[in-house]
Length: 580
Ligand code: VG1
Ligand code: CO
Image 1 (cartoon, helix red, strand yellow):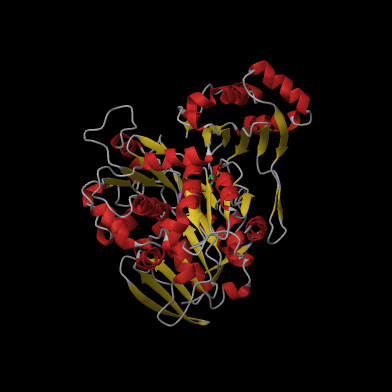
Image 2 (spheres, protein in one colour):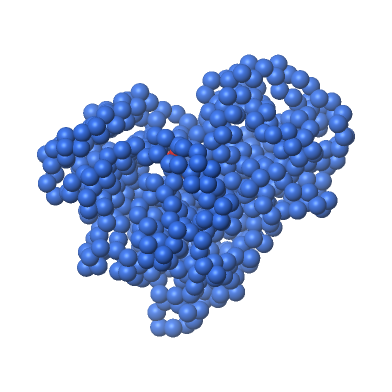
């Protein structure tokens, strides 16, 4: 093939957000739009990560992925990349990409130095919806801000990109290596099985035999909803083929380019079918709900864990996994190095860390901050309130891993004896956890797609308020007398303990004397307007009061949050779009 240099001009707004660049497909298909971003990324990497390197290109299979993969292959060839690895049909979950970067060794001994992941995660897909792209580094984790800042700077000055226009499209539906010859030498496209490397890693972490006994036990019933995302191919392979779950326990497990028209976001609002099956929906289920249910987002890095008629809030989920990991999961048998959560995630994990004497870290939203801690050997398990849970086995959150972790805990709590009188259930485990550690009542209100200027004003107003705590408390007491005093109000700022880098403006916090918190943030993953996230939390130590309805328990704080922020005045919204 030949290398062409193509002239181009910059596009506005190619700044990677919390997790890459996400825009409407109609934006991504503009001539040169994707090309500019890909070339800007190559130009932001050190030469050895491009020339002669091996890179992975795949994603959640959403609309436009197949075209994007062919474009990136041609650009990689032209930029001197030696090998491109593609999951069959262009499919790899985000955690599987991380695993492939870290674990896969090519037939010729090659290792990958990075990956383009094609996904907009939990955002809808299809010709009128979202596409996304992000770059992950050699450690398998998202590019740090130093790199994403460079990529963004490059997108603003880009003048040309390199492409091998005459390279024929590669058939990515069939496993195998296609070999090409370019001006600088050989170039290979290696299409490989999307699940093998990931499954091998999961086998090395968990005791598949004991999980299998649980899944095949007639007392245990199971349901997994991939929301038509890429998780389906892993669920089928792992839960059904390896662990013996019935095929009928999988729903929406065939990946679709438009996620069946749905919102591939595993929460109580969008995972409707599963929520109904588990007995949590408005209408009652046809059959007795399963003992255990779980769902994933489009790229399978998120998870929702449900018991029969029972929702596990993600902040509790990571705390419970951390509390039980050493006993229940072979990978952690020798102990945890430390644990971490994102700032808006509830403090349930903090309490576990304190009780178990573990190192603990609070980082800004987004997975990239956990990676540094893990690379430095400081953190084994971490999580976010946004249905993200994971460990240092890779450098992304991992939806299937979280389900296997919960199944391991269930297997362990039932002493691997599933024929007893009554199984220990998901609800039993959570209620027991609250009794031991106290409960963090928690909810998140999302105001999606509000006017961007109004959202900014609301945030500026809240920051401004913080200059006087006594004024804040005066306003709070006028709204409600049954909440405690605000003792600290600030914008969260993080100093990375490993590299010393500082991230500012990571969310507005109001901290109360009794441990309650209100947090306000603007989303960095949307593609239209602005999304305001409001996180509300309250700690209850008294074990006789840990089983209240969470919206009821949090009502006073919700009231304070909405009135303090003048939410309706600024946004014109009387209610959030999503409550989790
Ligand atoms: C959201 C979540 C954040 C998560 C991010 C990426 O970001 O709040 O916790 O890490 O999505 O998840 P934001 O900036 O919109 O609040 V995923 O599954 O979209 O890669
Ligand atoms: Co995701």
